[in-house]
Length: 221
Image (cartoon, rainbow, N blue to C red; front, side):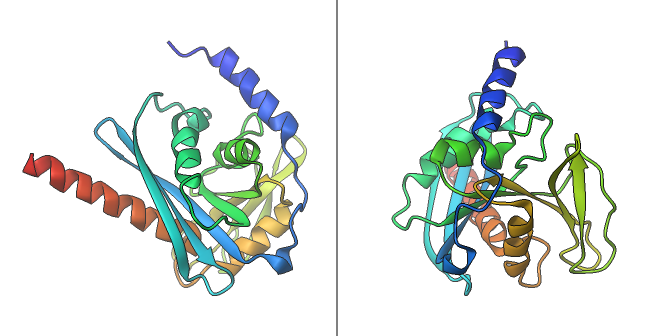
């Protein structure tokens, strides 16, 4: 049985510790990481890649495979996914200056999405990049490269960003220790012809490669 009220209180505490302004020098960023998850049976696979910035070459990676201990509940994904992301992060040899997470940042009903939760727990700058909007309103851009602000409860919580022709826009939001404007600027600099920014795109490929290996091993057993 999930005690939602207790979890909401935890999210309120996370939100109260969130810093939504730049606590890093954007011009001094050397390494930027991406995190994504895949699921196999009752397991969660969290994969992280670290890229040299701005070249976006892979310099480090890590992954963990853990049991899923929390159900899928929209708005509470951090309790399902954050523990494995944090464990994978702690296995890295190269510490990134910033982590891009496949999920929400402050664009969340309680301003405490997955990227925000991870950022506060690890005390690092984070950005959330999502494919679907969880809360807030804004104009949807139609031209590649355009962005439109998303407002929720009179706050700027992120941007719609049209990253590729023929694709729905991304939702880009600050997670922790970065402003909405800087989050958008960095994600724009990580687009290399695909819809997703390179950090989460490569992490997605990595997580799914590990998943395929797990599936193959399960068949052999």
